[in-house]
Image (cartoon, rainbow, N blue to C red; front, top):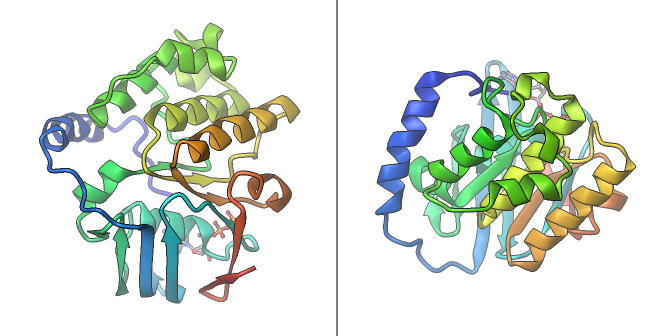
Length: 239
Ligand SMILES: Nc1ncnc2c1ncn2[C@@H]1O[C@H](COP(=O)(O)OP(=O)(O)OP(=O)(O)O)[C@@H](O)[C@H]1O
């Protein structure tokens, strides 16, 4: 997965984006958080997605299932406008997937590796994410909620994998983007951490956020994103 970590250019770009998005018109009304029509995606020599058609109503949570390498992460990256379809079309809350600036403002992807800035502290990571979206929020409260108050001033590179996951969860919860994509939220977490994931994602769902969760733990993920879809052979089908 492309990694923005430590990329000062990305930080500058995001800061410029803050100014741009703050003045953008509100999204057009759409009853669908996501619509894909015959989407194909080739990466290098491999065709990963082979004609994916999908409608996700706004507020309707989806759990993506599938074997290792099936294409779940790739699909999430495409929805987050990080990859362009080779063929086909998509819309996020009415915006064309090719309008990456609009889509990135509406979507948050919590990647499997957490996708944090290792040289920033926990608080700085949250503050930066808020700034990027032109939002205000209680970073200290979010850190407390995930049990990371003592890590607030520590650089992310010194946190454990589970602590990073908790921090990424705090960020997703704080941002509460209308379409929130979550890649393997339960990985690297202890029992309390998994309960916390369910609480915070459940809270987002309750606030009308559309969740798309890629997970190998359907019994957990479906508690907050009930509709199950299986990714296999480049297709997506109801599970
Ligand atoms: N940048 C890339 N270039 C070429 N192929 C890639 C790239 N990224 C992923 N792939 C391939 O795309 C396929 C789907 O990978 P993906 O990470 O989406 O699977 P996944 O369903 O998320 O798997 P897992 O459950 O293991 O996380 C794999 O065959 C992988 O090798």
